[in-house]
Image 1 (cartoon, rainbow over the protein chains, first blue to last red):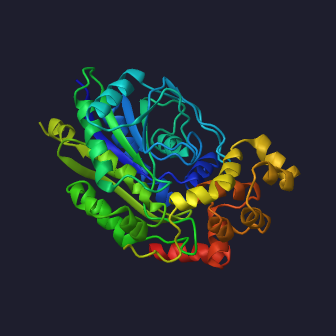
Image 2: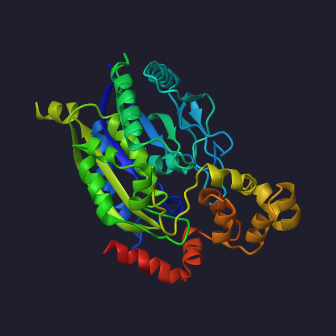
Image 3: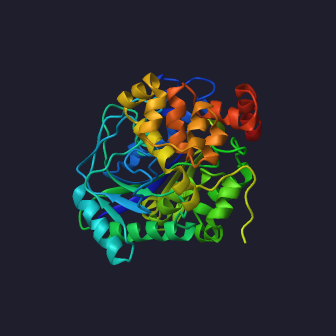
Length: 286
Length: 112
């Protein structure tokens, strides 16, 4: 059976793509952010996942505002990145796992999530940057199942709905008969706002509150409406929905084992957190 | 009744309808050939996408707040800004009426 080993949540700001291309790993501006990945690399090398289910939001590469699914699940054997128009290098492709994708799709629809299924799906920086941060080498050792959540055009799905979506994905993963080590990824956030007279808004207190609650008591965060999240985390801070879905997919007793938080990266409060899903820690302790 | 959030425009159905033409043009800037075509003939390119007068004026003025007022979504506007070599910190400074250095300093201060 498939095993959900844990999750990684991280910021996906486009500027990170440029900084990687320019090898600014030890630059004083960037080091506090990139340094947060040393533990992630250690953790991934130890846990050796086979597949990553990635919750993210598309920024106008695969989806335009004319036809915008609330939730979309990729079911391709390969995911390509393309020019996104803001000058970050185009990433190499990432392999998919169509069999697992269809298993998740079937389970989600059976569970009354009326998702969009995508046999062809471009992935943008919200997938490729976290992947490159996690595995800076030449090859990605995992296949992916990308799941896109609309965080762009309101009405957005609620915090509660995204947590439930993640839980449904988690149950689907646990029922997958193949012996796979699965990790989940949530990208974006934390607090930031790019648009309007409030551009540059970040909120350290609210970010801390969210991270403090996410591992042990994510349901308390469902009390925040989308309007509340925009107010507290900024207009683009709503990308935290991807974190909620990731957390939902961790079905066991969840422990935060690493946290890095730094303001600012570009206009954003940058965060990288690693979560272990019950089984992993218990197995090692045994 | 929800209170408006100061300095923030919710990109909702009203904004999405208002901004469709402008956002569609910005979406086309994913292609390098289209970015070059815009630079070569901005007037003609905007006409092709049937921008409203307010959208055309906002683009001509390179004014992000006006673009948002005309229905622009910031993720799409960022693609347009990129054509002029402006990143999100440059447009953040423009929208808040500060210099880029002041804008960056404000962010750094929020981290302390």
